Amino acid sequence: MKLELHGAATAPSVKPTALAPRAAGRNAVFRQGILIGLCAALGACASIVPGDRAYSLRDEQSAVKLPVKAGDAAEPVPANVAIKPITAELIIEQLKAAAPQKPTATDANLRATNGKANTVQAAPDYKIGPGDVLTIIVWDHPELTTPAGQYRSADQAGTVVNEDGTIYYPYVGTLSVAGKTTRQVRDILTKSLSKYIEKVQLDVRMAAFRSKRVYVVGEVNKPGLQEVTDIPMTVLEAVNRAGGFGPEADHSRVLLTRKGTTYRVDIQAMYEAGATEQNALLEPGDILNVQDRSFNKIFVLGEVQKPGSLVMTKKRSTLAEALADTGYIAQDRSNPKWIYVMRGDSDVPELFHLDGSSPDAMLLADRFTLKPRDIVYVDAADVVRWNRVISNVLPTAQTLFQVSGTRYPLFGGRQP
Image 1: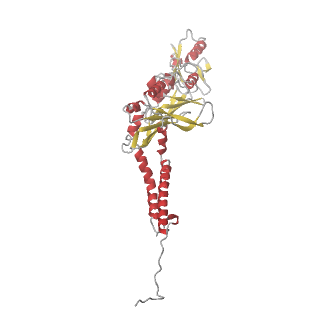
Image 2: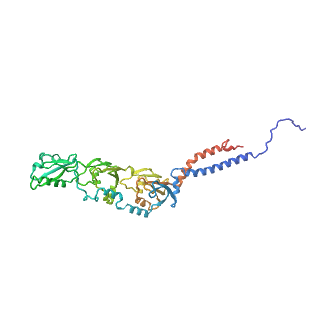
Image 3: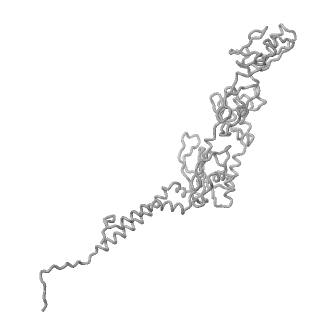
């Protein structure tokens, strides 16, 4: 006998649906979207990581847009600046440019203010001024020579020029001597005393120089006033009288201010190239300011052991010295094939490239002379650049994958 149960609760049968495959498909699409997004993020990060845009400079035909001052334009304008490879030909051009040149217009103007050629022989005779002390000697007439006593010093026993530029002398009276030379004063006194003394013989000499001064300031050991004497005083002589250059002095940047105009004097060029036109004669009232070396810095950045700034000594430093002073390039993360020097000290900036992987690279680097404010940049190796990008993106990628694997994935996906 077969029994049938009616009204008993039975579990409903569930028909297969496409829900599970659909959810799986959504997750697959989402994961593919993440991969595509990561690729886009990698490309974006490659342009965000500091210095990584230097990768675009690896094309020798590439150019960089920099502010360039053309002609007499008052303001610089953006222009493409080509990359120059550091080669033997470029080094030769540098050496030619560093050779002694003819005096510049500034040098000519500086010499012109002296009135004559810039030589010691052409120095004008000393002009007497207020405060100077004169020694007047009349032979066979000691009462006129040392009226204050023969045991006093020359400057004490001499004749002091008054503030109005005059002196008083027996039998002559008040005599204006300001602006005159000792020879002119001697001729005037000889003519005046001839009325009282037969065959008068006299001489006029400078006992003390007090009326004319130059000012030496800045990086010298003893800054202060320097008296102008009958011995011609040049820029170098004034520095020597002030105790010489200080330890932080920039020999190539000595500023001479005369009558409201400032000239730049390069003493280093005189030392190295014999540029004697730089050693100008000084005039009363000149101000000599020796600059320090803080402006003469170069900057070494990128993949070197100790990136930072370096102070150039005596305006001389090569690319090899700059790399060596910063611990040289980092072997584990740099690409020595791509070493750049960026120079913006002129109206037209320059950009140089050195292939440090070539055998003669260090010889070229040792001959390539840097200038103040140059920027040296060593590019990173490709694998280092990639690792840096990955390290920036990986935390975000891990978070996205973890969220997509939960029961509540992104974009409304469902678990079966």
